[in-house]
Image (cartoon, rainbow, N blue to C red; front, top):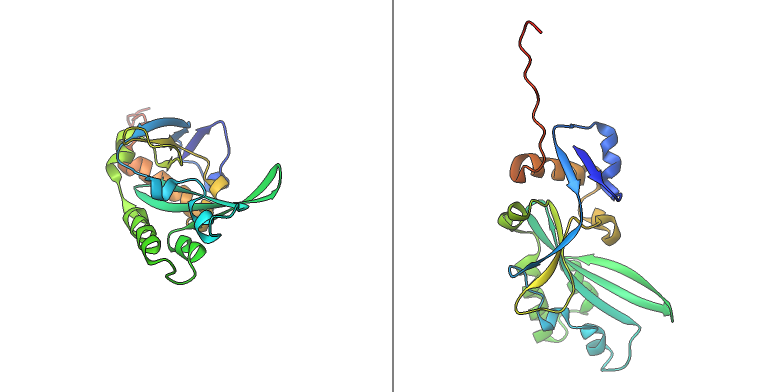
Length: 200
């Protein structure tokens, strides 16, 4: 697979194993609106969990949810930001059931635990082939933004290294998955070979 892009990602190193130039991934980021995905007030609310866990006190920790699309399936991501100084904060990334373990000590508040678990079960490791095909993108991210009339912002072809996606797919596997998904499912920018007769 030949990657045409203005940025690097963690799986780019796997190009060193060989390039099939008949498959081209034009990795351009752009934002679109979608009504398929939904980060509601409960899930997407600013600092919701830290406020609840600290009994309403001001906290140095805040959380953001995203839905990450990768080669036909979606995955739930929780980003935890910790403020270490006035102008600096660190971030950690958790996927799937790791989110529950991070936010709750046991079941904890049963209502919040149940709602969070339902959200994760609805979107983590679930197939949504049509969205990938319609937008000709093997990767996307449902952004943590304000819901506008039932739609959310979706970033096509984001940088996966920034959210430690290698915790789910290591470099070579991610590269192979994208290559197979482009050639076998969405079929973007494939370059056909030219047939030459026996004489030539």
